Image (cartoon, rainbow, N blue to C red; front, top):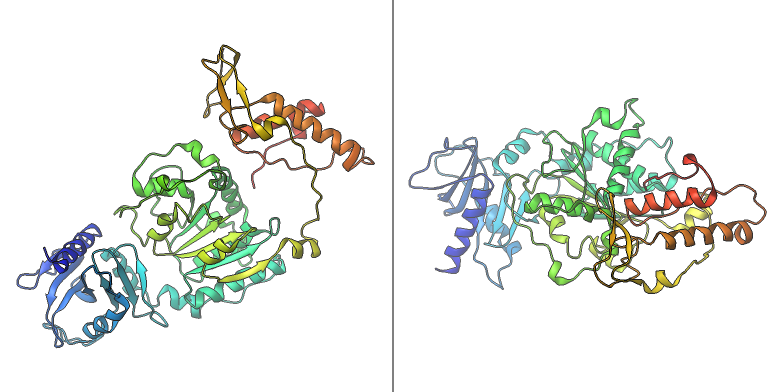
Amino acid sequence: MTPETKARQQIDQKLQQAGWIIQDIKQFDLSAAVGVAVREYPTDTGPADYLLFVNRNAVGVIEAKKDSAGENLTVTENQTERYANATLKWRKDRTPLRFLFEATGQIIRFTDGADPVPRSREIFHFFKPETLATWLAQTETLRCRLAEQMPALPERNLRDCQISAVTGLEKSLALNKPRALVHMATGAGKTFTAITSVYRLLKFGGARRILFLVDTRNLGKQAHQEFMAYTPPDDGRKFTELYNVQRLASPNIDPHSQVCISTIQRMYSILSGEPIDESAEDVSLNEVQQTVKQEKFVRYNPAVPVETFDFIIIDECHPSIYNLWKQVLDYFDASLIGLTATPDKRTFGFFNENIVAEYTYEQSVADGVNVGYDVYEIETEITQKGAELKAKEWGDHRDRTTRKKRWGETEEDTTYTAKELDRSVVNMSQIRQVVQAMKTAVETQIFPARKETPKTLIFAKTDSHADDIINIVREVYGQGNAFCKKVCF
């Protein structure tokens, strides 16, 4: 098999997976399906490798090339444009074809000729013919609307840093930049800012669906609550009264949803069809040691085509998201928008150094948005080194999901590390010791003149860990249910 033949076979397979019918020029029937790809279609400049028909109308062309280390698809764009502007046999209309593809068996590049400044981009897979039909029915492309139709941002109830972030992002999107980073200090309202952008992209930009990626399941719950609470400045109704928001908890994406909230682990499970251990969504990927053996590979899923989302907003876009899990992001033909309070050089590199807004912690303190802090460390031997459970010792054995307890013996000696503490092993005495040390330090050293307990945030590792902390704080302080409650950030 020649490299050219092998590449054609792979292109045929990808087209078929996306719902196209492949036909030869000697015998083709454009009524066979919504989308028909005809091989070697004759034009006045030579045969086009594939001509794409949607609802019997010619709409696009594919220039196929063999897989080769020296093959550069951008060089092929002139050839694709020539076929797109050629006279087609059995077609009187000379209107240029809108959708241009260059493809090998491994790589696909795509150009939408109706964009303000048509620019090719690499895509993971071919689009479905129904998607091209939808785009053809619209008067303007998404990128046209972003460049021409976004109205001025109402500044009422927005901080200056939030105004800067939304306007900076929209300027970037208007220039068709594929990735953008919003650097905003914790406490400055990143999620509120993101929802403001989501609302404008849906209402004025004409976005169909947006993916809001969160770090953990708890953060997904919190984001969903903020979407439900958000009231746009130009409409008295809540966001969720205007648009459908789905927090993904199953393998199915609601076709009517306009915002999907998910962890990247959940999205990988949906794409791959592999079941997910829901407890994995409770731990930040930034805290999990990752190895090359854990690298995630994504294959095309016809139920979730690459055009499913127009934008992906990545909340807390730390490097663990786009190291082993990067293929999940690459799968979708979507603009990537990162939100973070703690970027590093890897973050800047991934987002192409396109920092659309920058609001540092120091600026937030100067503005009175945040307050300064001092560090008071509480360390125990167990938090530093871990400990050991001896065989035949009795203790509670708790189900990780239900928290149901079973009193029983430990079967064998078990050593646990500091990282495993409060996850696979819970040491209630350890939590109590830290809470008691915190109470003593606040009352005698940090705020000795205060009679009441100051408002305090305690960050937990998991939902289960949070429940343990709540119960012990109430016990140590001798207070009731209202004194300590769980919130999500």
